[in-house]
Image (cartoon, rainbow, N blue to C red; front, side):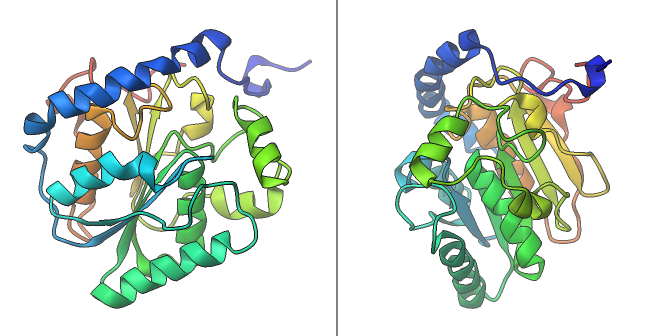
Length: 257
């Protein structure tokens, strides 16, 4: 008999999927709170590669990258058009971008990936850890079944590939060997939140926010946490201090499911 602990993770409910319309409000809140968001720690100028989610392009991460630039980072989009899955040339293109940013600056590059972009980020960190300073994922499905999302059919339709990809996931599921943060929301209407939970360790953590999936790249709480994480000096990683704002902004990610 299958116990509750071993039941497959189900995709988010239809109600949560409908609630994704919150993303419009979340983006508006970021604009309204822009002056306050400038109080977040400033960066040291290192490069940040931002990878978009499924069927999205660099346009979707424009506000996020604009914010990172305002905090002193050299933020870049991936420059590969719309994200239609790991089709031919995509992985090579991302790796080339990572190598180019590293070569130009002579410094390690942080990678921020939204949803499927976060899966790519972990894959890049697994492939070339010596080039990566840190990884931050936003609502990325790196654990559990590939079908524990409301987007797997879209993925298969636009990529022509199966959502089940054990070969790639062998490199994605293990925690990267660099400082790693997973930002997730239990009210995510696209990706089951349990699929975005990282195993906390000496340089890995989870940050929970109350947000939609489509709004993660613009939500004020995400932007602040992202700036805070990227501002850490190399070799001086510490877990995020959620107590600064309290549980209404950053709930305890380790609380009972």
